[in-house]
Image (cartoon, rainbow, N blue to C red):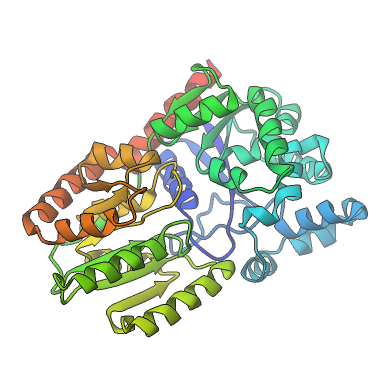
Length: 431
């Protein structure tokens, strides 16, 4: 099959959805499918050292989209100027200085994107479709998430016979944070366009059921393929208990992912006196809007005298992430909302590191299936510290959970398994 993946880029940081889509593209290519990846909005940030040959230039560049949303005449900009504004270096520069992901500020642009050919971004969408039609015509176009369904009518009109498959991952918390009236309008627009899509693929059973309900999807439209990762590097790490007990956090460094919640639990564990040598490591993607809260957290740690026991590693590389995970006793990302999946859990377990996660969303499903850690009640403020404390006191339980989790990920949560399942669904759309 010829498969075209449309993936929103981030410009300057790694995100779980991008890493998942990168692994999917690699897996599909290994299986012999002809895969092309088109970044949308911003350049992709990959963990691979070099840009793959099957990656196209950025389409629907974020600067052009912003201008066309704000200024009616921007749709008449000459092609050479649009191309200039889509240059990767300029887009990366803009992504580091603008608040590109905080949904409360993105209501009008989100709604315009969902309205697709019926909204102010129509000329940019026509340009995207024209570019895809000029390449080798794909059999299937895969959308990274449902925020892109506004493209489907234009894609099917410009590429007759093409099938469209859409992944569901992380849309709900983004849309629910939009201010009114954009929140309700965006959900309504999304529901109205779901019939344009041939198949939806949810990344967990929990999220699939939840989104099927919110989007009024039938069982024939919805499939579930749990995420997978490239396991070779992390699976090859030698698992050793760190010299001192160490709790780790590896996700976007923001309050929504619960970084401040984990710091509070760490303070409670230190204050208990039961873990005199305990250390905390915080790592992950740091976006411009996260810098203020992180600076505030640093000041708080200084006041409490805990700065020397907390290591902070923003925007780690792939090799740095492996070393980071290898240094942990346990990982916890106490997300404050129902995660659709939680790729960081797979990465930790692949390295043999057990996890402690909130008992909600796709995290419940993942921890229970892998048996790689413990769940706690997110409604109980003291539950995280209690669960971490009991886990850290039991070396055998930590070791066994890490071994169970690693075995589960290496056998059932690989990029190869994910890509095989996704390819079967894409093939079924053509029959």
